[in-house]
Image: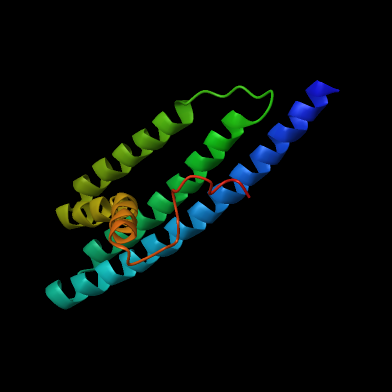
Amino acid sequence: MTNTYFNYINLIDYINIRRAVDTMIGFLAKRISLLAIILAVVVFVVRGWDFLITAGIISGAVFAIYRIILNNKNLLSMCELGRRRTPLFFIASQLACFVLLLISILIDIRLFAGMTAGFLLMPAVICLNGITEKIGLTRNGWGEKGEIDG
């Protein structure tokens, strides 16, 4: 009886965590996309139409969003009952980042600069959200205690 009760509680916690993670992924994906578009417009205004930088920014942002989705799915699957997974997926994700940056630097330095900027949009979005939360410009409550409590 108690074992079933605890499995039920774990299932409810898992569903709430999954819902919060899906909300976080949507939040980050929207903000990263918006920042990538703004950065591409700034590059267009400052440097004219530089296809390699713009392509690097957009592909880096798309890969960053894809990494967020895959890493969160992997972390959630590590939390599921009775499943054992290793953190090798995260290491493989970092290796894929390194390989993409290496290929981009071999093609052109401008593509490398754009891909690096695209990859770094995710930490930039998180930092900007933290700053705007702290000074009171936004009140989305992302990252506060009790967010997962449903």
